[in-house]
Amino acid sequence: MLSRRSSARIEPPLRVAATALALAALLPLAATAADDDPSALAASVMSRDRLPSLSIAIAGDGRTVYSNAFGLADVEHSVPASPKTVYRIGSITKPITATAILQLSEQGRLDLDLPIETYCPDFPSKPETITARDLLAHLGGIRDYDYARFDEEFLSRTRYASIGGALGVFAADPLIAEPGTRHQYSSFGYVLLGCAVEGASGEPFGSYLRQKVFRVGGMSQTALDVPEEIVPHRASTYSKARDGSWMNSPFVDLSDRFPAGGLLSTPADLVAFGIALLDGKLLGAETWEAMVTRRETRGGETFAYAAGWRLSDRPGEIFHGGTSVGGSAYLYIRTGSRTVVAFATNVDRWTEPRHELAQALADWAESR
Image 1 (cartoon, rainbow, N blue to C red):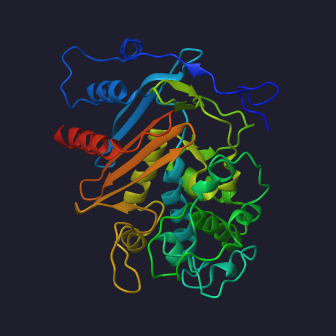
Image 2 (cartoon, rainbow, N blue to C red; image 1 turned 120 degrees about the horizontal axis):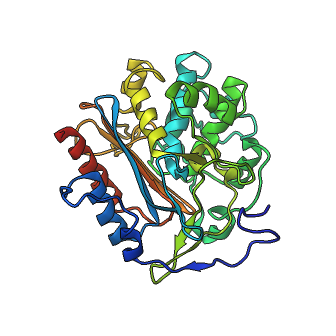
């Protein structure tokens, strides 16, 4: 499979020279912008963290109040980012997959407490029962990426014809814990949930999401990340070199993780997803409440995760970050005030500052 940048083979990454000064010229900042204005926050974050672009969308009380983008969607061709620029969103895919699972549960088509192989016969039975309920909260005992095999797993170039085929990466491995007893974040656990979506719905995973989540949620630019497909406004992807400069990210094929981290989207679409959840368009009120309720292990140990959402100590604050090869994104919701914030960039290894930025943007929206 060829990269979109390659005509014959994957070439070694090309380092891209860039400076904060060049970015500053692209940022539409007002001279009188307050320190907490989204454009000023974007300028500060992009300069400090050396981001090629940053796209931001914010909703307050269920309606979009801000949408803008800064920097470059394609550095080599000087293509400006816009609110329509499409990014890899990584693990923000997980709350979307969780929504699909819970929809099928509401419809009576999937029992959260039956063995997962009931809906995913490609997954071999294990000595202990693994359920969708446990997998949603990373309690299923399924391992995550093996970073000793980083190139083969996280940087996989293999095309899998189906989610069932992608299970072969981990399906034969022993469980790392008895299901329900240990919270261990697992992208592969969500791949297994994607297989269950197909089995319970009778539809391919991507088709189900398009019809039951994206269309209902008003997410017109969200799709599976298939490299050879023409995706309007798709951002070029970058990684950071040791000295902080950018280079083209390596080619990857995300068909091994579509339900866990294989979607493309925009911050505007992610905000629409959050609004649709808050408005009850995607899930009923009881299911939504259960989705964002803190889980615990069988032994009573609590942890900061629900069903596809991370939780903080602040009541009503839920969120999920996403990091993929050549992309980073964040989705943040305050359920009480119905404030939704999403942002994305086209470079990887940008993680720690995101929550602080999301809170600052939410504070701005709530102060208007």
